[in-house]
Length: 149
Image (cartoon, rainbow, N blue to C red):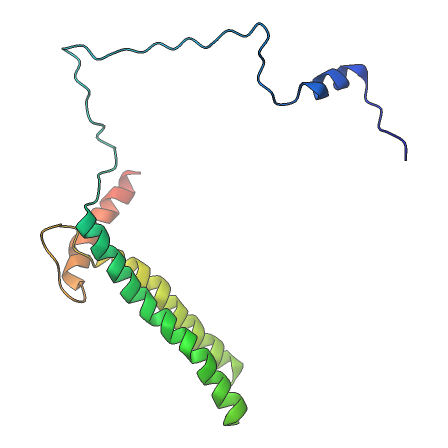
């Protein structure tokens, strides 16, 4: 097999690679301005706010509950459908199996969103068990933040 011959100009360009240019390169000029007494650093209004550890733990436990239960149920339905079809010889239409599995796994996906929105975002308030009041309180906040972007 013959080697590929490149024109001289392309060989020079190809031989440079991705290495930084060191010969004759000047270091970039960095101008740092220290805030003076009249210039106090201002917090960025668009900066993300920190979420407390209590709220993080509350959100995680709700996500695991509201998404974990449907996913665990869906995983238990696989052997149940197999048992009904193979051992009990029940004629289950595959469309029914697909629909049920899709709905249960879909409930797991919705459970992630519900777990976030149904948690109380106030560190001092635990919130209700199902979280309907918290969703009514948290959804407008989320919607306003999304509309700003």
